[in-house]
Length: 271
Ligand code: AMP
Image 1 (tube, rainbow, N blue to C red):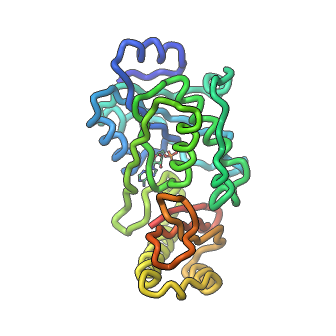
Image 2: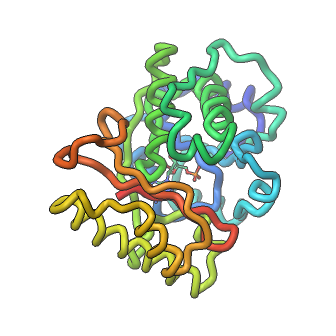
């Protein structure tokens, strides 16, 4: 595994290859990231992972500061997975150049997480746009756990006619059911239990909603979540994955999207 901190040296290396399969991450690697990497290794291209905690996508400084970082451990994991390249850029390497493409922010960026984290998706697309220009990957591997992010990156790629193909990867979960997330490492045992109870609650709720959509009583659900130990709820909404629209008719296929806090730790998922 070759490690790069500078885009020019990385680009010289990439030029020698037939193409790149790219997995952008913010580090704090877990089973979710590992599954994306394993998918990428099935492709005929070289696997490149990036680790960059992007300051621009954090709407609160405190959240940026407390985001889990463990580069030493990440490097060990990546070496063991035998990836080809690891790119750990500085902020200057990423933000110190003018991009060719403008960021395209689809209107659905205003919904769900976009409503509660002002500037978050602008920050995500800004960094992804830059990575795409530096690396020009054949494939980019993205997790469905962050479905709104995936959808917005897809729209940006389509709008700018970028030649990278998105590979959508399924959500990997802990045994308790909760989605693997770097942020989980900030949860203590008791908070893990709360997250798992909330996951179970939503699993049962979704089954019930399929039978009787009238049970979708948002105030009642919020109350139940607070009783289970959530401290704040950002949203609970049902979206159709294809159209990425809130469902209007109960018989439509949907995923239940939710975001909530345990203390100051924000967790999101869709099931
Ligand atoms: P992050 O490091 O959180 O920015 O995530 C990097 C990539 O890993 C994104 O495409 C995420 O959607 C994906 N990812 C994060 N958690 C999971 C998970 N539990 N299952 C599958 N993909 C995930």
